[in-house]
Length: 295
Image (cartoon, rainbow, N blue to C red):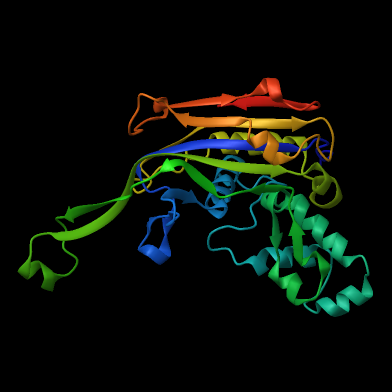
């Protein structure tokens, strides 16, 4: 594997949705997630990381070193057992640990080398946690916040009809069936993220090649994930702050404050990305920090 990254990064993702549901809340009938106090829309970090994982899985297709640990219909212990098999271990983790004091480090290194999402986001590997191994919890260098809409959103419930009837009995009494779906007419969302070069060096080995793949995945977050339920979604801007050193040259919140997203004064209700203005106060950047914009 390549050398771990040597610079800290902070970044802002701007993405929008048009006539779709960016992230349904299962506790609210799959209604778009919303902050009930303010009316701002929310997209969870888990949702965003899922799409990054899906993109990497799509473009790499199980290329060695770029497999995905958290994936659909694959039990976690199946992937965990690969590490034990590779290291010649057995199901008795406590006995294996006693026989090899370095087992924790070896398992962690194996999992990080083989799975991109562990190298990036970390993981809780239940098999090893239950076995009282320290490697069961790996803290990843890449962390994302919840995304929040720039303006409050007003979700709409749309009634739809279907001509296909579910059962023969139902077909005797009706010609159509009714359904519902929720949409956000338009919403621009902002998510913030952090990449720790210190954790990359000490723990997972997240490399420059991994970093470039991460940027690529973020820019194409929704391109291979379109659906009627999500409507029209796209990443509009990726603003990256690169620090000159491993631990960083300025606090993250001060850099994020330099990014201003506001609705144009003449626009009463935003319905497209062009209704907003995005600016970065690059003249106020602290020494040792460089701003890079992709998108």
